[in-house]
Length: 501
Image (cartoon, rainbow, N blue to C red):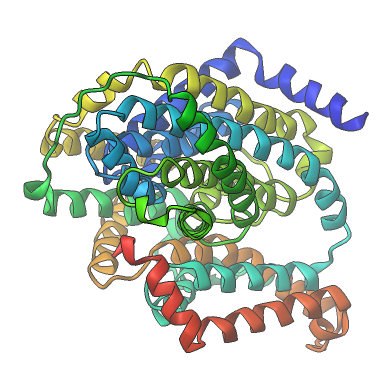
């Protein structure tokens, strides 16, 4: 009964005209940036963080959430029509989706992707509603030692699921943790690593770092590759799958939803990993595996359902524990902090309207996407003809004004430029920036819980291994780190992320 009353509160909150408007804005922006290759949900949300400062907390978080899962829809559009994934998680969809388009079944492929994503989004939204409250209750029993160990698990998992070298991912986490130390010591009040600049006494600006590493760096990368960008228009007709195609998509959609729901909770890149895992499962279970790569319905339905389910369930650790499962969730935490909300299990009890309003808005947003996506296909594809050198000055100006408006601090603009160059260099060195952002967000929380646990235990470090939950979490972290360095696992990681190279 509590679940239904909570959902009723959520739909009442998300169903207000203001919140419906921002949900619509979010899913439209998400679809747009999903369609435009190279921008991505992470960069877009980073750029929009300054705007959320002026909005109500519920409205801003609903809009940012809509951008995230809306991008999963938009990425499939260009993956199917022009063989150019707008989002990383849509890279697998391009394999068979584009082949379906070449056979004149572009409309059917888009409908399969949209319907599969809607089903997955609906199921995973209810999973969030079902599992979030009990996990929140458990999290309220955690002490400082348990939170420290949980964050260690999150950082280690982000290393395991990061693209490319594990050593580089580990270095990115370490760099993020170091950047998180800039500011004033939480217990002694002593400035640390501020270089004598008073403006950094409160630490580096999260918005400036995120916009630089993801926004500006992405712009530089896209400008570098602008000359190789080509657009192949596709004629879209028959926006409904045939009866046979509908039958073929049912089982893959269900399996993809299950895979995505499970993997989306994992820190790192659950939605991306889910789409690759779903494609592998469908190919192995198929009676005609030779059809994959030639326009197999299961090759579109499974991965699209998986990546959307993964995007939704990644909200579970955010809403229950205050732990980000991916860079977008780290940005969501940043948005909550900007609004004066302390991420963690207390959000559900202290601000139930916000907690359940976000959950309810996910289903509403997914319904909006199904209704809007197919009629707007022509518009999205036409936008691909706009040269990137026309778009980037507008984006840069928007970023600069937004970052400056948060604190009216010119040093934040210097930070954006600096971290933009850092992000570009990291990209050239094939270093994944996601672990850096996770390390930066979790670093202060990690330090705070470490020092509090040590104070409570009177300096006894064994407190982390004598408390059962904390010891179990640390054991999991060590096991994950050992496993990821095994040769067979290392080879499998390279195969999984080969599309991202």
